[in-house]
Amino acid sequence: MAGTGRHAVHRTVVLVDVERFSAPGRTLRHQLGTRAGLYEVVGQALAAAGVPWDACHHEDRGDGLFVLVPPEYPKAPLVEVLPEALARAVRGHNATSPGVAGVRLRLAVHAVEVAFDEHGVTSSSLTAAFRLVDAPPLKKALADSPGVLAMIVSRVVFDEVVRHCATLDPATFRPVQAAAKEFREPAWIALPDHPFPPDPAVLDRQSVDSATPDPASGGQAVPSASATGDAGVTGVSGSRAVTITGGVRGSGAGITIGAATGDHFTLGAPPPPPVPEQPHNPR
Image (cartoon, rainbow, N blue to C red; front, side, top):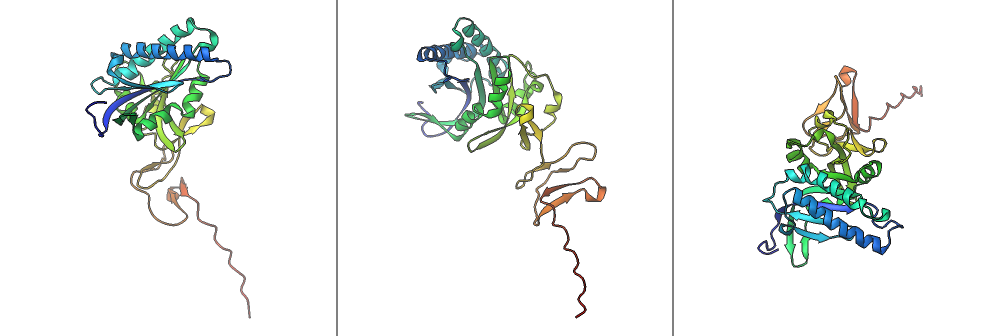
């Protein structure tokens, strides 16, 4: 893009991927129709959010596409307006398309720094957006939903945008760990056209860094104890909870907390049992 040189610039990335694009029932004719419909519905949804298609950089990904929205367009409509508009447009497309040409979509929204060159665009944060849209919890959320759209937003988008939205209920999002290849980051999932029931408790957690996906809950996160580097650790909940707000350091097999109170848990392996005393040899 002209004027950016080799310097990274800020963009909001909207990444859309078609569920089961290469399913056996989709012939080439169906795939071409699906791709044409994808561009149409994404363009409609962006317009509803106040973002002109021509103002954005976009690239094709075969079974999906990504759009880089310039910073002069606010992020809030991209999570408040665009997802519902996209779901409506998809339902309209499906109503006039053969069954196998119908689509369901995964949507990722992330705030990124990217660098442009003569071949396109690149950055590690853009790669993270692709990992988000491929995250197993997002795929499962869409597979389990009767709707046509599942959305995942990065932690920065949730914390800086979703939490402060006036027309979007952040309690309908669910925290997950998005893990794909070398990528592992906290993120938040929503189902715009078939929302999760509001759960204000999910907003009490300041961060989902220590959350791990629970397969039994469809990829939703559950708290877990962890201790990595200087990060704080929250290990248990309830009236006798223990929270470490500073770094955990030291040596040995493990650290036991709360032993004096009778309520305790151990970070790391517990110490080995004492060696039994050997009988006295009279010689």
